[in-house]
Length: 500
Image 1 (cartoon, one colour):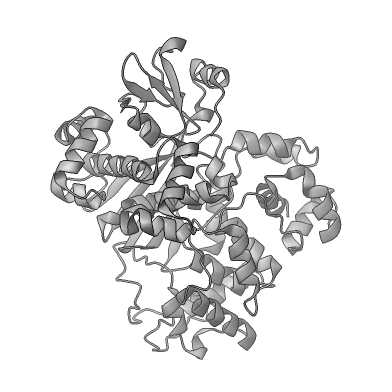
Image 2 (cartoon, helix red, strand yellow):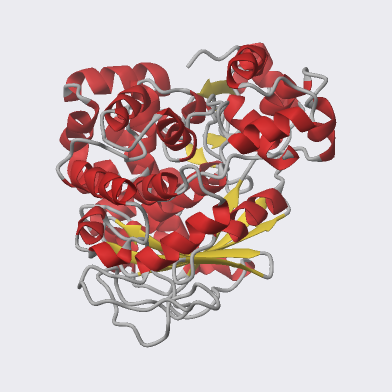
């Protein structure tokens, strides 16, 4: 990552929080590293070094500032934009792939040798995959120390460390504190929200139009999987080691997250997926500035700054929703999805209330795990969908077989819907499946794969929104006009939906 010293230093001198996560400030005279917005006195130029990642700063022998907590800064928005190997690697590391499969597993997922992957990451991030994963483990451990009463040995292994000694050494090196000292200091923080819960703050770059996200999820919420209640989005999660639930409440400067996990090793993947779901690593200032240059969009940006792209915690879930939502209303798609979820893969038929469209009480549990106190579970897996009987689909045969074809492709590895997928390759593979056309593949590129530059020009609501704003409203003419919105056409798509 290229970093201009003068530009970075000006951001530090002005304590500009928009640059948090873009780079880290190392202060050689104190031996600490900070986020750009740290409220401490601006260090002298000769004592400053800039790093592209927290791992790079740690590798230079610096510890995290206790005042600004740079390890909890928003992630770099580069990984939202970039679809290259480094961007994909960073998303997979955040999702815990190195902790689960090691560097060989990460390299295999990306199609490169370990040596070449290390070289690329070191050149861009100042640290290799192990160091980047180690920095994430340290942050996960700190969260568990400060928000749970677990023993240190349990926390060490839950955070992904290979031994308690490695855990102790890493935390002393990164935070210049023993784990027990971090727990003592938590008295200054908010108490955990109930037994078995983990509470933390998910930082973002303001502004954030939280109500737009809550409105989007509320209209599409599936009973038993998700709900929006009292300004909080609740949902069940399917995670690498088990199930979980999360409650996400937008607040000033952060989103409050309360997690309940069947396996604490899933903390880092759960956090990464929640950040991705709410698009918290975006750079709204850059996005809105580009779109506001168009006079047709400028009034909507002034009225609603900080619109994000509602993304997904589960690529397969989003793909199923996209196929069912083809050429039908949101309400109709939701009703069909509710019926599908009421027929678990034990192949026992269940009835759906004609009055509400919700599953009737008393149905057997499916294989998505027991619902937690909030009664929420993760979405069906590909294997479970393949076990749903014909009567559970409630849709034309062609669409039903499209869903089964997708499930088979995901199960056998033909199609990868993971966070670090090669976007172009994934779209190409999806288009080879029966029943999946350009709209569905591009919708998934935008919401499941995180592509910031997708315009759904053939979408009826997009065309209606364009017409409402006085823009061209045929696919061909809208495509040509939208070139001025690059590389943020996904955000323009959301604004056109809202205009409709």
